[in-house]
Length: 182
Image (cartoon, rainbow, N blue to C red):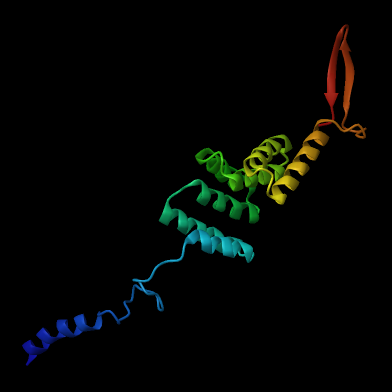
């Protein structure tokens, strides 16, 4: 009797792990034979919903599934920008532009990061590239370019700025030093 029970036990356990059974390693409600939703699409929807941290996780999952390309890098950089992580966003968006220098969203988003960091001249260059590649069709890129041009020109010369200007100071006989309030 005991030997019969020992022989029947493995058969009973094998029957429990059939196609309808739930494994303890498989989360409830997940069909392993089903098709996964694209991580980039999920991330884009989460970004629209304002769930930036979850979007970043979806983009990272997409990087694992699709590999690292300019679209994935641009999306990860955009999520970091939305989370206020400007240094990380700039670094990742620069990699996206290196991967594909004609990818308009990466160029635009890198310009936005650079504007936030006060690098108006460099941001202007990236906005100009994005605007040219987009043929001026996107209003937001046009507005970003206008803002970058205005700020970069204001940063170069501001005639109303009295304080913080330059002063010429004589040090010795025939020697002068240019000082600023920076």
